[in-house]
Image (cartoon, rainbow over all chains, first blue to last red; front, side, top):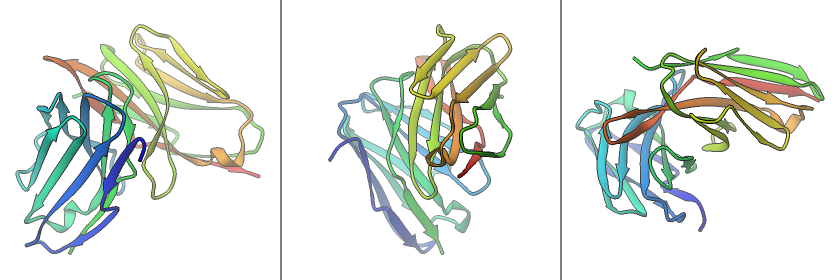
Length: 112
Length: 115
């Protein structure tokens, strides 16, 4: 595998479910990001991790919980989501903060 | 609030034409600016990154410029091809506290190149 990978690519969940999105980067980068892309809205930054420490949290609801166990992996844990949380969730990485970001293919999430 | 705006929202041109996509940002104290393309249902592909100390970057038929004083960036595409059809996204990053604070995106320009 090369670049940034995300699993699953598609996810359908009910509002009471708990699920997790996984991101893995094979680029040796130190910074990782979660973004949300909703229909008709600009891509929104959710979380920034640098050297496995969270450095930004853009007022994201607590039903989204990120985890970065090491510099290559990033998770987004989901629980009690709402239908308006349906979106494309994109993971990105960069060598360090402020440098070129590379994106994964995204997870298309549908909340019923 | 830092914002990024892209115009036009959509553009359709015949193959072979040169074209310019526009991006503006509200805070001139920018850290960097990055252009991406996104194909339907796909992730983002990085095209060009311009650091705040740079005025432009070139890659093949693409040239991106940055004018911090006016809060503008342009993406120039030479000799457009049908394969260039995609949504083009402009994103800016500013500095806060301990470092760059992640990308703020525009809504994108949906480009169609007619064969």
